[in-house]
Image (cartoon, rainbow, N blue to C red; front, top):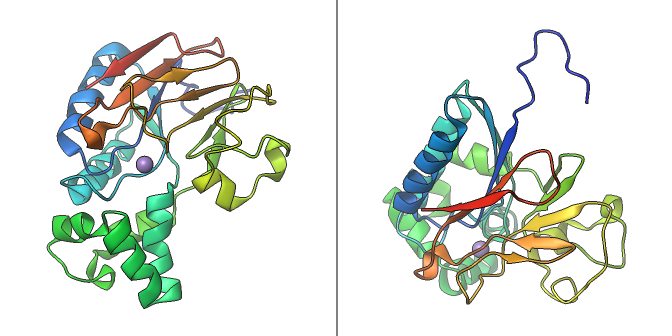
Length: 229
Ligand SMILES: [Mn+2]
């Protein structure tokens, strides 16, 4: 990619960070390790989605990422997860979605972190941030997406639903995609990243007592190392 004049340099390091789910202490610990590795150079951070729900402090987890976005030494890309989608659906579809989110998917913990009882009382800045999240990020070598992709379709034709929710047949597929797919969404029982020839799962189950993981990418397609909180 050519660098436009006046633009900051393309970062040499990319950190892809798995499902946070309100685990703000693990997020702080992991980000400080990323910063140490970047050693003052500008780095790219790709968050794979699912900032909220189940874990203790979605509010502070989101604020931590918003603060990171304001820093000149960080280029921050934040993807939407299915949990953010569930929250946003509460505004569109009413009570039925709300009950689903609260009871089945840990939304009560998110409301508690804001000290509110309704999604309508989540602060506007955070709601706007959640609405702004993108579905995928293609860096030319890797396709970052929350859940995965439909192996029967090209990357350019993926549905929103599959990118937020898919497990099978994606997880069992050995199809080589146009890009190496980096995703979260399906917590690894092993607590370790799952690296395959065609994809990498970085959801190491932080909210279930596992580590929060960052895959570190440089020029080569595959990660050069992993950092954990
Ligand atoms: Mn998740």
